[in-house]
Length: 200
Image (cartoon, rainbow, N blue to C red; front, top):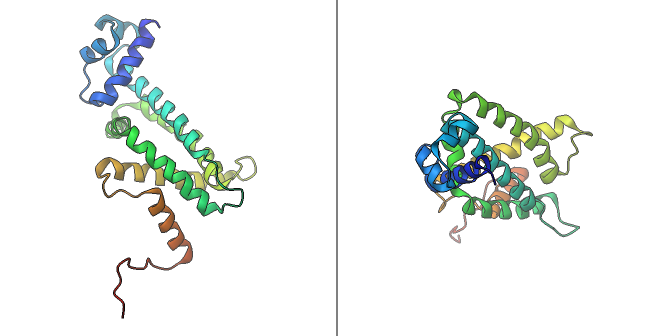
C-alpha cells in the first residue's frame, strides 16, 4: 500500500481504539507507519483524513450488516419471524463494532461544522433506505418507491435507535427477540402480559 492507504488504515484503527475526538495526528502517524507531512499531502488535514476513514469504516460495517440481514430463514417463515431472525444477527454486530459506532455518534454531534460528512451521510442514507425495505419487507423500490422510502426510513430509525441504546447501556438494550415481541404486541394492538403476574 502507498502512504494514502496506510493513513486510512491507521486512521480507522485509531477511530476504533481512541475515538474520533481523542485521535491526534501523531496517533495516526504511529498507527500507519507514515509521517505528519503525509497527512497534509494526501488529505489536507487530520480532520479530512478521519472523516474519510470514518466513511470507509461505516461502509465496511454496512457490508457486514447486509450479510447479517441476508439470514436464511425457513421458506414458510412469516415476515415477523424473518424480522426477528435478522435482528438477532444485527444485534450481535453491535457488540463487535461498538467503538466504530461510538465514533459515528461522536461525529454526528459535530455534523453542523463538517458539511462534507453531512453530504456523505445524506447520500448513504438515501442508498440504505430501499435496501432495508427490501431486506425486511421484501419491497422492490422500482415497484413501490413510496413504500420503500417509508419503510426504509422506519427500519433505519429503528436501527439507529437500537444502536444508541446498545452504546449507552448494553445490559438493558433490547435483543432481537425483544424487538420481535414488541412488534407482535403493536400489531395485535394489545399490551404485554406481565411476566410474573400473580395467580388470582
